[in-house]
Image 1: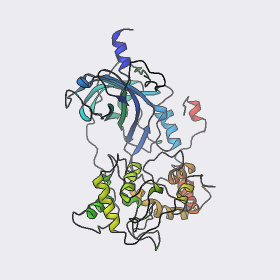
Image 2 (image 1 turned 60 degrees about the horizontal axis):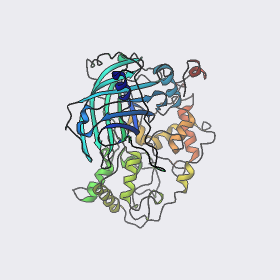
Image 3 (image 1 turned 90 degrees about the vertical axis):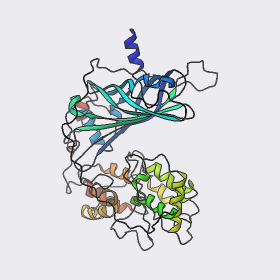
Image 4 (image 1 turned 120 degrees about the horizontal axis):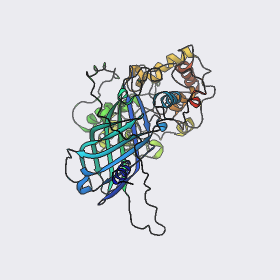
Length: 467
């Protein structure tokens, strides 16, 4: 094997997990790849954790490193099974082009010549991206973080114009979305040890060599001639602040209403799931919506939170931030401020919550999910769903005819198989089965809207697609 090809094979395994050390291969151990495509109402987001990759570099000269990552395109999920099938068969044609491959040839404009344990460096990737039988040169910013244990974390994002990769712009199956996919990745690596493994010790991380299938690298995709006009602002939830000033409780209330309390790309706030008013007179609030979770009013003196996983409201907020708000955890100061706010709206003692209904809600699918009242379901959807889904406020706008009944139930109850990490669990205590049945009937009934997907059941198999 000639040396350029050998180097290319080694370099095809980037972006996903390795333990830092002097020089050698860093193998992916974990990571996620996402894409986002703009839509007329809201964005479509796909995600996969099925990828393989390897980097070859030295921390002392990290910008000279090479590598690559291959993504299994058939494993990408957007949350709607039929749309995913269409995406594989008609859009990405995964039977012919099963993988996308990102290669890294070098790092330009490094923020530092070397990277030490516990530090972060940035630069610009110079490499190529292969998709749908086309391979083009790419450049995009990348961040590399080396933790105290010598494990590497790499993240970056870049645009993929469909036309530049001979991919027809999605229309029916994606409801006339945009013509550019924004791809981002966040992956961890560990250093592959070459020394012999001691008896009883865990085996070293396996190296999976990945290579592009297209030899010719075309020039980078041309930039769009005009930027797209900004979207109309999405309507925010109406609320008033109870506390003013800069003390802990006032700052905590600001965190309670701020999407920036979460991570990058987060739209959720604590207020989307939790009220801050007294619900003893009923779950329907003055804004016409019912929240998915219990009010924080009088919650400060509960003896436990999150079914016993958190001892304080501040610690519970930390779990919520990681579970639903795309975050990596709150700071201790943020925990204290949220705790101070919740304590300030908790005049009475409070017993521990009974979490039995929460767990029961995640046990089984809804019986006869389409046997409800579609007219009643539309009104109930306004009450239970529009805190987040009104005009794309946080989640996408409801589109009757797009969904599958069991998919809606899995998302609402957070049953096994659901894929929306930000969707809160609606328990049977707050959204009874009878009301959920009416909502599902409204969203999936032909009387509400004609089904978006009307294809033969064997269409995917006929075109050679696979799940």
